[in-house]
Amino acid sequence: MVGVLQPADPRLIGPFQLLGRLGAGGMGRVFLGMSAAGRPVAVKVVHAELAADPEFRARFGSEVAAARKVSGLFTALVVDADVEAPVPWLATAYVAGPSLSEAVRHRGPLTTGSLLALAAGLAKSLTAIHAAGVVHGDLKPSNVLLAPDGPRVIDFGISQAAEVTPLARAGLVVGTPSFMSPEQAAGQDVGPLSDVFSLGAVLAYAATGRKPFGTGQPAAVLERVVGETADLKDAPAQVRPLIERCLAKERAGRPTAAELLAEVTAAQSATEPGPGSARPAPPGPGVPPGPRPARSRRRWWRPLITAPAIAGLLALSGAAGYGLVSAAQPDRDGSSLSQTGAKMAVRRAEPPPGRAPSVPSPRITGTFTYQQGPMVYFEISYSDPGHHAAGFGFVGVEGSDWPQQYHSFSNPAAGIVEANSISYPLNQGCGSGIEFTSTVRAWIDDSAGHRSKPVTIQLACTT
Image (cartoon, rainbow, N blue to C red):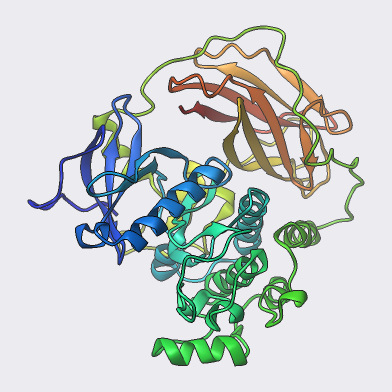
């Protein structure tokens, strides 16, 4: 939710015009801003009194460094920052969607399918973050934004490089009591497996609508984190074992983020009816992306959003991507979050002619994009209850002249095919110093040659 600017609020931070307030916390305020190119951004401005504290400046500098290191890997992309300014600030791409805490508070716990989708998205996020050598250190529902194309992890305010000593003073516990790991609660060093514990606590909250270790004074909550079992009553049976593994008191009992992703993928496959069909082994994560398509395509330079469109963007914000919606609960006006989300991100397949309605066709359930070096990756999540999906295709649209391509799952070219998801890289020449976008339309083909309803995916490059 965006609030109006107060008389004392700045109207310009760095090169960004401020349009409204997104929130405030112990470290500073966050504003909705706009770049000169028309891109919406979230601008975090630290409190003036903290800016005079050298230790805090060092911590804020660490946050910016960590955010830049993982920028674009399932997080809000860093656009600009100035840690030396009289009042330091950090600007990231604006994520149009509520936080997980807001979604659960207003709509209740998530359904089983939505929980598994959330777990997969967060496991992917942590896998990428940890691969970059960063530990988040404060993963909690308010730091998970539900973008239309999937979750984003934000706020690296107490994150640290995995190989360095924490900035916190000895014995000082830094984090959020209800979602920190036992070792973090005890003031010990944290690592990637501490983030996994926090991920489990976040999933427990999403599954039950309650903080997993109760409420009360921070000291009492920390005691329960260290010595008591989390409250998982009412958590769906299909998800509870995954959460319990993440919440193991000893680090050795927890899965890594990558191992958790594999478990979640298996659980997602197990929830679909019918026997699973064999898939070819996907290329490993280290396989380099394929060559740039032979035909050149036009870069469609344009502002990504204009000031008059801000209101529409905010109105469309919802917990849709990756199926991150709970069962529909009507508002007083009769609308529901899941109905809104369905319009935004869940694209149901059109029943192909000649096939009995009782045999479900593959359908695309969500999309996600991220930038890595010169490449922009787009991911397609899909449902295939009838086990008919055979391949995928895409083509450039709206001024983007990517040639039409089709790839079977047995020969996905540069793509990576996993259970119910596809990832494909396109060399968009990112890093040129110019903001631009291109657009593709993608679809799933089944074994009979029928196409799912296509989705349009915008691929954005940033400086």
